Length: 449
Image (tube, rainbow, N blue to C red; front, top):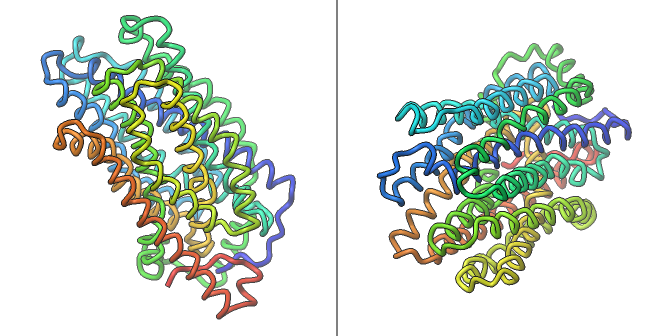
């Protein structure tokens, strides 16, 4: 069911891109707020004071990781709704779920107050977050890409990706601000403020999304489904006909997801816990890096529309391979200038792969199963490489006596695999266009075979 006939309205394209940006920014703000808190505060707030430091750190990152367990489920559930009912309604539900869970985290009692119930409640809310974010990304990408002109899909798709940098900028900025009140105040109440503030952001996001028109592709999908009498669930069709696309997509996304947490959450934990660097200094550096990502991602995606999105992604992955070890090496120098320089350099090359990858992955699935397909790829990738990346890095570094090289090597390996998989997606597209030039010209959205 290729979407060959719809002609996107430029005004709708801009509104859809801004709606995708607004929604994903709020979703990722909540998500990164949890990641930041897990790195620097949850170990002291939600676990016993007499627990060994390493175990507390692993437990804190464990609460972060459990949210990824239900992300594939969220992708399947909301992918089904998005492919059958529409992208817009799904995005309203996911945003509301994420916002309520994040606000509730800001109200949780500590371990000192209620004992083991505290981490249990934290895990429950984290699971709700996981289900919500499982359905968010795919819908945000599609609402932007499917409303975009054919030759600007990479650029418009990057607006959904920008939500990551905006969310990171807002969350790290909020934690940096709360840190100014001092360590005791931060542990007592300061860490709660970023979570509670998400209620205001969610309200704004809901207003924007409720007013948004659904993707024009959905009208064609509904018409063709009525004509064909199709009844097969989207997830069944994806797993039967496009499982190769899902598998390749998982590894193509590995650095954009798991690698991101290595150079943010784990880097923050490594710097403060092992090297005893200033929390404020590192949070400020991550804030600057997120701001750089916000600035350069649209431009790099614009280049992708002109030279090929796959070329930009491969260049970004190669940059990660080169910078992986230096990123950690400079941490040991204690030089603020060098640390910030490497943070900025790493975030620049990661922007090159993160921005265009949305359009590349969307090109792998037919419209009537596209929401489910890209959500499965993205969320299974996050389950494998995202949630457990900080835990794996902490464990590997501990086995190596605290050295940084195991996480650096891990980052290099998944980036090298990502280069091969991105090339595979591109080759599959070229072959399909060559075999079916008329269909490819109308709607260049191939399926890996």
